Length: 146
Image 1 (cartoon, rainbow, N blue to C red):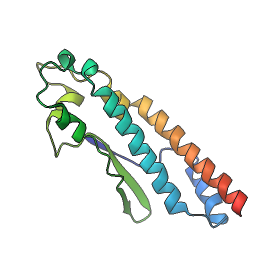
Image 2: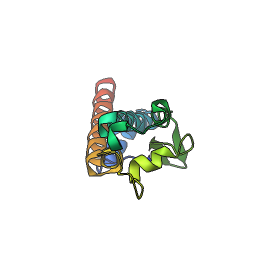
Image 3: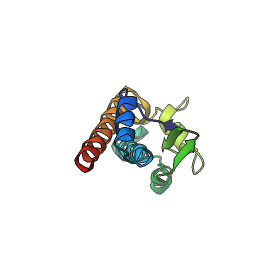
Image 4: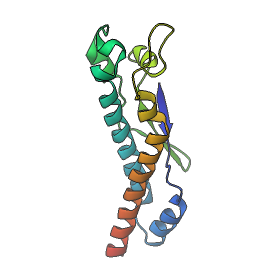
């Protein structure tokens, strides 16, 4: 199951105001932050879909490439007026197995740590740090060029 992420960094408005004041590329910075978010979540999903994290250590998995191909890596930022989002995690369009990996079934445990690594508090904290760094660097660069 995929999750849509927006900008998670709390002081976003201050950074955006500063970028606008310096006439820097705010839309490009937002998109860069969201693409970095998707890359981070894809990296975590890759890690947590390795055999050692799967139920029965991947013994009953039919096709490893299906799981890896379900990881969203399209870098497609969706804009709706002034709100930007990006899909991350595992797509259910390619295989339903991703739902079972995240949530488990009556007879199968979920993949160890996958949900927390892609949607939980650990992921939110890491995403906020990644986005903060991108906005900070964009403001720093705008000051140098400004």
